[in-house]
Image (cartoon, rainbow, N blue to C red):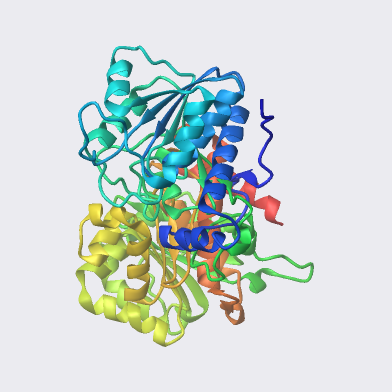
Length: 531
């Protein structure tokens, strides 16, 4: 019996680290380059070995494994894994699926692609029980097949159309089995580039082992829900990754880079001023949350400019926040040296203030109702674009509906390709975009970061206001001379890092829905580790 040991190139994808993400076309380039070093069969065999080791490590008590193998390379990986698992003494049931079904005589055998002939033979010779898809699905329905672990090896990065027929039945059968599901490369039915589903259903994996590269679709859209815990095995071919990487998973390096170090001789004038503009009638709390989050981030001074003057007397903000008097208007030059966070709870009342804010703010974070105003008024959109030509950076923080309004499309269209939507927005308005949601995307038109922290606990009122204020408060501390930095602008670096901290602070609080004020306190506490 072959001794199965942990693969030396297999690792857990920890959100503390920065990871490069590659599309299907990039991964195919790596596959093609690997053929100069080893045969396709050798690579497939090593992939299968890695999968077998991974499964045994995750489920050491498992005795019965059900492997669903598709007609391509993903199926070959699964078949080699099945052979090794059987040699290791496990009971292995293999279900062969081909979608769309190829015409064959009713009694004829399953006809695998030529590349699968050898791994199929290996699985057969190991003593694994092998059935065709229709028969296995029937046996699952009658509870004849019960497994401790299910291995999804149906489709990998080659899937380009919605699974139908037998493949769709297999996805439903996998999801119906009462056992942990481990997917190879991608959960079947998930688009690895976008995180959208190819059809109404996709495999819901407990763990996913991505081979050769990490795919962006595992971390945004529905990917985080479908993929479960993500692992990576480069199979020893990391050196073959392309040199240019436009998409990354945000990690500790970006989080720490967003926080400016404090030197002993620094003073409050060193760390800039931030101004929160928002709080129309009935929505003052949103502006107050943004102001408190901004203050917690640590700028030299935090100002609060309310759009509902009548509410100012009833506010009980932290005394450190400088609340501007009712009816206050910015004088000449007031906004030119400040970071402005505009739109939190602003309603339609923000419209008259936006032309001056867009024209004069040194740095600008546009959120919520300010984004809706830009979507409705073409002249405001033009003013936003002109900021970049005058060297004035802007960050937009839309949720999917606000992004759809700005792009003139549906929310479904935005969610179907969140990376593309964020890039289009960034290029349209010449700014950095933070597209909120599962796997928040930060994009400046060239470089993208997908945030791995946070989750549904943030789906409560006010957490978006906290993000806007926190982002603006971090950004205000950086001098204008630092705006261009390395591969990405300071705005993009801070925006990506702020999103990481925001999600991480929520994760620390647990899975229950978080409230805005407790999220702010968690941000303060967790960000101390960056000092």
